[in-house]
Every structure is written in structure tokens, then in C-alpha cells.
Length: 363
Image 1 (cartoon, one colour):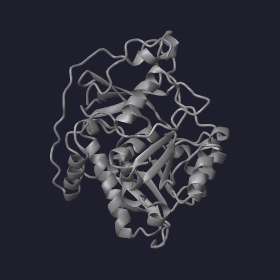
Image 2 (cartoon, rainbow, N blue to C red; image 1 turned 90 degrees about the vertical axis):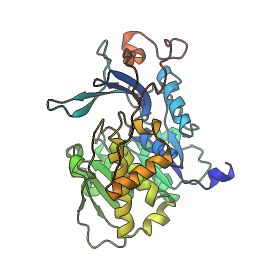
Image 3 (cartoon, one colour; image 1 turned 180 degrees about the vertical axis):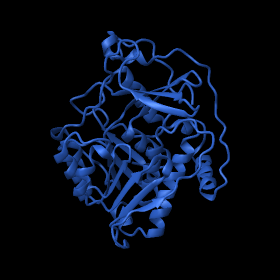
């Protein structure tokens, strides 16, 4: 680690890291990015100046090569991304379309568009593997979005070492592990669209900060931090967004923005967070989320604007004078989502893969 890296906050994370195939039906453009909630949050924080280290078991297949290439571009560390036993790189298709009233919407597709077979799915890191994981440097934060024995064991490990633990569930595949995770984490964040699947399990939570995102209605939060006057909900309205292109990934930007502001020095900084600082951090995350909506795909804006330009745009959003970002338009091309489908008879290994599609073809 050089002197510059030594000054950077460190975040480890495990959960959904895979390949996003973004099919924009509005423009006819397709692009491919490293994605998944965990993948996006860690990549955004790397873009913002942190050291980000995903813990995963991605195979050295064609999709995995594209994921590694994209993550490396933004400075994400790949030391722990291919733990044993390796598993096929998860793939999800995001389809952007216009609804009946002409507004951009997106949906996720988990099956091959050619044969209808399931694309490779997420596989968690194993407890026996992470128990001997070598962590060279103390981290300030740990993020996970799926429960498994391995993920919960990692959360305990990093919590004991002073890291802020962030749990952002999308479901409740294992209620017992979910309750355990909700008792360990310091920040619990979830979407109102998904909370029904695990609402009863939230009673076990001992999180210092609990956040429920409300889509077009902003978010609400409650806290057990020392300054808290009771554990009651407080609402924060959303920032207005003009010319929405795609809302995918906005929650990931919100999470990254919050951590960027209040977790850079681990649990020590979190414990000293005041009501004003917490609200400012949440609003910073909301402003990043609003800015992200002006670009297709979860992290499309990172390819169009520099870090300094994004932070200035966010400042304008918070101040109420957001400008309209310029978007780059690309030439449409044939969908290539089926190239990685094992059911189509095209193996995902590098030696069998077809000509690799160009990464970051468009934003």
C-alpha cells in the first residue's frame, strides 16, 4: 500500500457482484457493466476515493472478465473476488422501456432472451472459505446485501475490528440468518417495495440507523445514535428530477453517499454523528441518487462526468439549482445478452467465448 492508499478509507463487501446487461429499448443501445447492489456500492465508493474490496467467488469466465475489467477501471481491488469454490459469474438483464404514459421505467430479467433458460445466479461465499480470509488492512466499513453464513461471519469479524456494518437486504432467504444480520449491522437500509418480504424479521434489528427508501416519496429514517430523542421515523422528501433516463442504481448511489459522509473513520466517526450531520449525509446520498436518474444504467453517469463535475452537480441539486447534464448518444447494436447463457450451448469460459463485446459501449 502506497502513502496515498494509506489515507483512503477501506470498505470490504460481499453479496451481489455480477454483470449487468443493459438493454435500452428507448434508444436501441445496449451496454455492459459490473453491477449488483454490492458491486455498485463498492465501485461508486472507489470512484469517490475509497479503497473498495469485494469478496466473491466469480469464475474466470467471459462475463467475469468483463466484470473484472470494469471494476479495475474504477480502482476496485480484485484480490478477493475469485475465492474458492469459484462459481459462474451472475448475470442480470436490465431492460429500459417507456410505460403507457411515456415515462422511462426498467425491469430486471433473469432468463436468456434467446432460449428462456436461467442465466447464472448469485452464489454466496462459503463460511469455511472466509474463516481463513487474509485481510491485510483494517477497514472502516463492510457492506452486504445477501444473507449467508459466510456473509454474517464476515460482518461479525469486521464489526469486532471497528468497521461500520451496512446490511441492505432484498429478501429473506434464511430468517434465522436475517435476524442475526439485523442485530449485527449498524446501518440497515431497505426499499419499501421489498420490505413486505421480511417486515416481521425487522423486529430483531438493533441497527443504529434504519432507512426505508420510498421511491418518488423520498425516504424515512430513524436512529438509535446517542443524540436520538426516541426511535421515531423522520421523513426526508426527494429532490426533484427532470428528464429522467433510468432510476436503476439510485439506491446504490444513496448508500454510497451516506457511507462517504459518515463512515470514513469507522465506528468512531459514526458514534459522533450529530443530527445535522446525519441528515446532511442522507441528503447527499439522495442528491447522488437524483443525479443518477439522468443517465441510463446504474452507473452510467460515471462514464460521462468526472468525479469533481459530479460533486458540483450534486451541490447544485442540494442548493436547488441543478443543471441538465449532457448525455453521450451511441449507435444502436444487436443485443448480446445471450452470449453468456449456458443453456444456449455457449460455454462461458474464455477459451469458448465468442468475440468479446466492447465494454462501456454507451452511456
